[in-house]
Amino acid sequence: MLEVRNRAGETADDQNRRPCRLGSPADRNAVTAAANEVDRLLAADPAAQGESRAGGLRVRIAESLMVGYMVDEEARRVVVFSVRYFGRTV
Image (cartoon, rainbow, N blue to C red):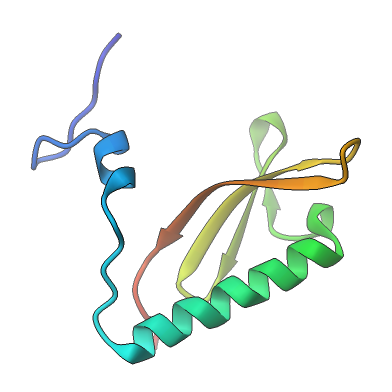
């Protein structure tokens, strides 16, 4: 299996394990607000949110966060598999 690394020699798993460092209180507040909004929307109607992807995956972008998730209709559950922070948008 081919292992892809970035310029710093990190794999995607290495990058995902690294904690997110938010610089300012405004950044932290923006991330908290975006996460709360995604929680609210996914709790109400997850299948109608975001954009569909192959394999039943969905992506929802809120402010500076991109959330990847799957909807398990049978179990009435949403599984979030990734959250990416892109910095503040102005």
